[in-house]
Amino acid sequence: MKELVSIASDYHPSMQLQQLRYFAAVADLRHFTRAAEALHVAQPSLSQQIRALERELGADLFYRARGNITLTDAGAALLPLARQILADAETARREVQEVAQLRRGRVRLGAPPSLCASLVPDVLRRFHDEFPGVDLLVDEDGSQDLVRTLGAGELDLALIISPQPSQGPALATTELLHEELVVVSSPSSLPPAGARPRIRVADLRGKPLAMFRRGYDLREFTMAACRAAGFEPTLTVEGGEMDAVLGFVRAGLGIAVVPGMVAARSGLRVTPFAGATMTRTVAVAHRKDVAPPRAARELRRVLLEYLRTADLGDAAMLAGDRAR
Image 1 (tube, helix red, strand yellow):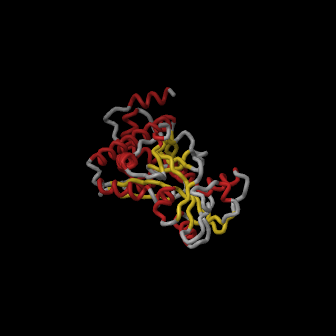
Image 2 (tube, rainbow, N blue to C red; image 1 turned 90 degrees about the vertical axis):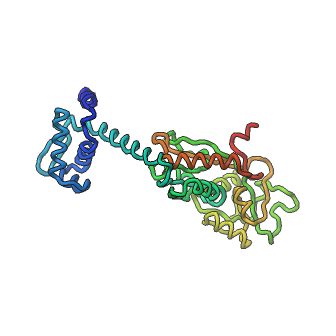
Image 3 (cartoon, rainbow, N blue to C red; image 1 turned 135 degrees about the horizontal axis):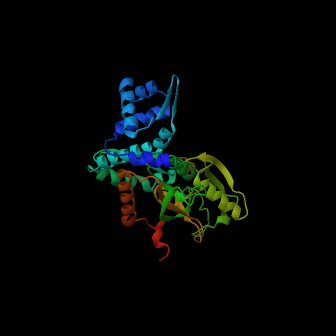
């Protein structure tokens, strides 16, 4: 710890980011020539800069032996500090670029297929109208997979169905809305609830269900609800994504439990459930330990503004409205 404090206290503006970048590359690759090739610089120049850094700090950073480059104690103490300094410099560079009115850049959004079929297109259209130079990258997947992808740093934001059992403390989530789940059926078939305007979960017993693939949030929710009601659902076809399942229903292969916002756009017969047990909560999530980039923060703002002003109908209510 004493060595670490000494190295940290020795850092001052004359230490160059380039020297730290060269040092970190050699520490990673354990080879001066390969580090120079990776950084596209001449090996003598890289060695000279690291020597200058060592003189600056008053300590050797590497044990140099032919074919065997290892960190000294001083080098091991400097490495995490160097990584943090380089990361902070990259964050500053990115922020300065993004502040320039977001003329260019990208944002990576994850969302379940059901939200990609309902909420996401309208939100992305508004965002694109405001920031046409920002590339939009969408990862369509189940919430559990999105949580893992977000945690790995491969997404900036994700819309997920909350709560997730494996969500963990590394993500910050904000509940957005509570969405009603409904039953959709082909208009040419008999109503699933008969003459009644609403259907109970128990009424699904023995009825043919078009079911989503394994790992799909809605599949797990529906299967759990049926089992809680004391029966195993009857599946006529399974394995599809949202568009496929709606197509199966349209073709008369069965009925399906889907979100209300999707059902409203489907052109299928919509039968709501009795009571308030068949609902799901949609949240937006990002990593706690990394601030979302500017483009992602603007997308989150557009999303929240859209939800405050959009007519969601009877299919959903804002999360803050439930307590009123």
